[in-house]
Image (cartoon, rainbow, N blue to C red; front, side, top):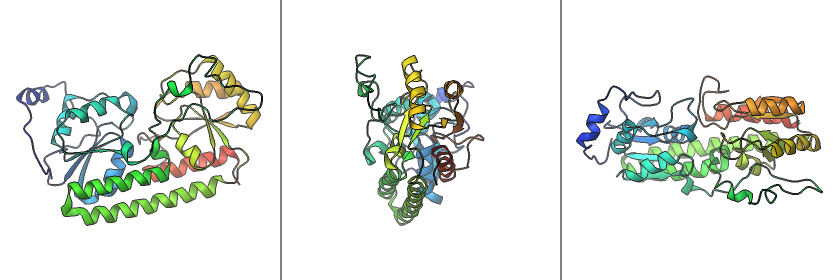
Length: 321
């Protein structure tokens, strides 16, 4: 649709003609200059919201390819041009620094930061200690909060994801008023489905043998907090960070103390550390998907299907009744 248009500098047009620049699989053939409301989303959870709320009126392009770890994204010249030609950018500030920078440098009129539509919190690698134990942060000479910033993984909490959806819907209504009624209707339908998912998790996890689960990295802090669970992550917020020997020993002791049965890993990053810990501690392994992208390895074709698969995996690992 493009409510407003701006000229692309000649140097940029020339750069786009270079053979070295190829479209990623998530790029739309017509990501801008269409007769629809053109939205560039940073990665899958944002693209899913845009598609569900925009419906037939929106043309949605994701900057992150399916199967690509979103934290590692670097913005190409082609993608910068897509941002310039879009009607709106939907992103989650703090998750992908390259996206934050690129969006900030564009003159795009509608910039929707999902982080500003809900409250972000601090979540570390672990959630509790046992009697007689002391935290390791002070031993290392710095606090846990100094090791990480605000946790960006809000989409894994259906309640917070619904809050973001409502904010995105209002932004779409304002940016494309001709289709405001449809955006409002689509947003309401999505929020209703998310409320149903929230009920599924609440009912499915309230009666379980254990409340502690191990994950590859600390992506499930919001989900754990919402449903009265404790996430113990091998690594921190960054999925590529390596755990210390002290952290691995701590988790081995934790598994015995809390009756942990399973170490969860994910599809987009290496499972080596998770499987090593599981082998050494005589635990099982399974997938708990942080839904940063949908691939052929995902246990479902969209957000809701994968979240239901996550619920099933958690119920099994926690001994839910």
